[in-house]
Image (tube, rainbow, N blue to C red):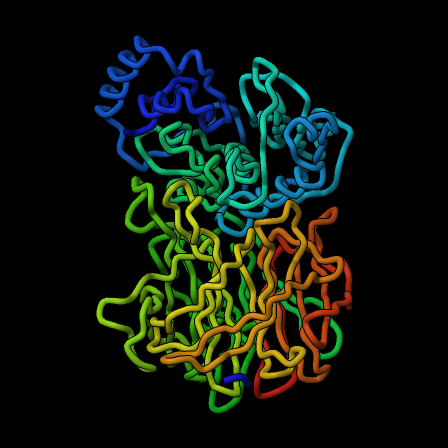
Amino acid sequence: MKLPPPLPPHATHQLTLASLGNRGTGAASFDGCGTELRPEVRGSSSLALLLLVMSMRVGTASAQVGTCVPSVEPHVATNGVRDFKINVDATAATTLGMATSDIRDAAILAASSWNERGNSGLFRYTGTTPLTDVPSDCSHSVVYVREDCQYLTAEAKAKCGGTQFLIYVNSRTLECTPRTLSNRAVTGAGLDAIGMLMHEFGHTMGVHHPGYGEQALMSNSPINPNWNNGSRVPFQWDLKCTEEMGGTRSLTGRKRSYVTWMGSAATFGASGIGAASAALTDVSGSSYFAAAYPRMSSGVRWDTALDGTWVSAWTYPVEVGGFKALNLREEPTRDYVAYQDRTDTPDMTTFGSTRDTWAVYSDDNWATKIFGRLQHCTSMASWASCSAGATANVAATGAVSTAWLGDISKSVVVWSHLDRLFGGRNVGSHEIRVSIGKLSDTTLVQPTLTSIRSKTAPAVACMEGAIGGYDCILLYVPVTAGGLQLKARRFNAVSWTNRYIASLEPTEHSVADASTANQVTAWWDSDDAALKLLARGVADGQDLSLWTTDDGVLWQWEQLNFEQSLVPPSAVTSWRGTENRVVYAN
């Protein structure tokens, strides 16, 4: 230990007045299907007058904000998993300024982001293909990046009666000018390939563009082109409408015991769940494995399972967009679950809306429950309190992750900060924050701002002084790289003026052969005196794999591609014993 609203859905290719201000800057304007708006059109003053009249008429639309708009393509309900393959024309990749592997990774991350943050459609990458269309047997969908001169940057077409899809990405404009895409830093310039492809995958769940002023990743308005400004996290409207149009999930929870090797899988709870997370509960001084999960197929019911036996259920008025059992262990008999509902703060029409994290906890095995927004100090008055008025909600791009640092008896909570201002390109967007300790059941101490930005929600594991001399380790996929290589950064919890801070080592380490488009889970195994890592990979099928390390620098795989999970895995260490459990869903 070291001390104006967007246009209605039928007006896809028309401009709003705000986009006219781009003329002369060299910046292209896009609609939500990737339509590039030609400079000679943007400069028309007569068109500006017409658009002013149109925008005034749009404001009088009779439909209410929040109305879901069905896709113009006949996509069917997509709550079941759909496999897709990728075909990338080498010339197209060169034109776009991306490596072929980066384009593949952008598509995998876009699809996996819906699996992790949404509540409807499920996608699984199953390899590359030479096909330029869905096969005649309708066995899988296709994402095709081609060297073509088209008005649309990308388009999602329904195939096989809507049961499969074909997503086109065109590398050149209608005038055959090269387009430039990137899947790197969200703060960079250019069109974000990940956000763009998320938009197209959204169409395959039966959702068109919002028509009445809603802020959404599915927006088609150049006034708010969320997906080409770096937004990779669905908004309230996106989650509401993909569920409404595509149906809710129906997965089966799976659990495995881990002692020195991954055991056989067993089901837990009931089918029809949407996500799964491992936790602990303490009954009469003995620790038990627990799993918490939202049961999506039956609406708004949440269940908590104790050693596989259903023990509690409650209802909540909305479905989830991110989910994780929290395990704040300062009170070991208290059960916690952290989650993100789909309701943005403050509402679905606000450009700067975020996705807050909520906590629900219980002292009596969920017979009674207390809810509250999870917050953190932005400034500390002392070790025990925030400065006056200095709190903020924990706004995260995905689920939070927790670990326990027993030497100082503090929970360690990490998350990737969500800030949608300036299209998500502001300096704090996707930055990992580390909070060591809590002040109350819903208030964390002031976090350390790490300056590390991640494409995925980060994970954390701790064991005082055991990880190569460090206390904890962060696991993430950096936004500064094109691929999905998993990285690790160790840190110590250091006593500071009024709190513990995370003191990070300067060196970033690669987890050998590990790439992922999802949050991973990690834990310290006292039997092996080693750190374990479970990840959903990016190879064909996206199977789960297990890695191990004794110092956080040199990693090796322990069990490779042993089972599939459609959502991120979760793990828990029983701190009264040596047995660990992992859970996932398929």
